[in-house]
Structure formats: C-alpha cells, structure tokens
View 1 (cartoon, rainbow, N blue to C red):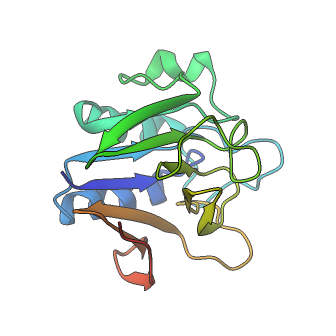
View 2 (tube, helix red, strand yellow; view 1 turned 90 degrees about the vertical axis):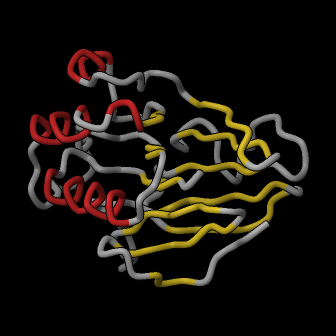
Length: 181
C-alpha cells in the first residue's frame, strides 16, 4: 500500500487541491491526515485560498480513502460536515509489520511520547515543521504543514511505500532525504 501523509490544511482550498492532485498523481491508496483540517486557528494567519467549505467538499469526494485524526483546531462542528471520522485523538496502524501511532501532536509528540515499544513510528503534525528523528527507539516523523509551514519550510507532505518515507513539496518534488526501514 502507498500512503500520503499530510497535516495542517487549515481550511486552505488552494493547498488542499494541490495535496489531492499530488495524491492522485502518486496513485496512493490512502490519505492519512494528521489534523487541523478546516479551521486556521486564532494564532495562525489566514492561509492562501482559505475556504473551509470547499476543503470539506473536496475531501468528502475521497472519503473512503482517508484516515484522519483530530487536531487542536478541529471540532465536533467540523465532523458534522466531513463524511469520514476525524474526532479521535489518535489511530494505531500496523503497516508493513510496524506500529504507526498517528496523532496531531498537541497531545503526543517527540517530547511527550505515547506508550510505544521500540521500533514503532510516531507520526504527528501540529508544529508545521518537517522532522525525522529517533527518540527512545521510536522513529518520530512530522510531515510539516501543507498550508502554513513555519521557519521557511516547504509546503510539504510525505509519501510512504515499501518501507520508505519520502518528504515532498506540494508539487510532488522530493526535497529532503528521509528514513526507510
């Protein structure tokens, strides 16, 4: 299976459209969204193309291909318009024999690890910066933000296939070497 992993769309129809185009171009099987889907949050600027109604319409078109967790900017009102579940704080996936703990990052992250055994993968967004590091035997990965990257980071997502994680910019170009296992 091929996964596209992204976080922090923050209501940007512009970047959501780019993400979905990359998802289709990559011929991925699953879009794993790590929260903050529709709302930009009170501390963030409005992202380019801010239009939450358009975002939920686009995502609902691929609802059967999405796994999503709740971000700190997501709410029950958002769930009323999204046709896929997104209110869980985390999900646990078995991917190629390894446990993936996917969460937004406001509850669990590299400095506040969930209870995981060594060899597991912790995926989260929230910080809007791409990161890959080992923490206590756990591979910690943050895809960065699709809509509102920080510190001059790229608008980015991750593709995963056959044990290889690859960071890509919003146009699908690989921009940083990444981890494999």
